[in-house]
Picture 1: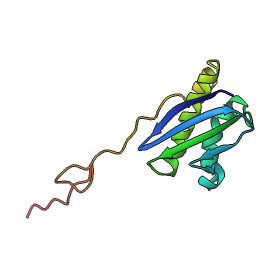
Picture 2 (picture 1 turned 90 degrees about the vertical axis):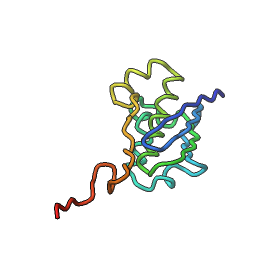
Picture 3 (picture 1 turned 180 degrees about the vertical axis):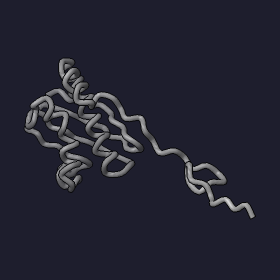
Length: 128
């Protein structure tokens, strides 16, 4: 049984995905992904690469995710699963690329600047 792994990132979340042939068990940080992500939309995001390729129930995924929020973690997992599926079969890339899962979303939080309230917001200006 061959195990392949890849890393997915989104915002400040990092997901390490280990994929092997199996029965469709997806565990995130030692828990089932449905208990780790209680929202159905996030569960859908995690399993999207399998749905696009019609591979539900064919691979087991062991995922370790750290940092970020729930949505960032779910999207990092999606990217990690996508990259791992491409390692199993290079033909998967075309369908995954068409679905928009191959490209990493580069948006990060902009840092707060000194002398300002937030990254772009300034303190109220008073002329007098």
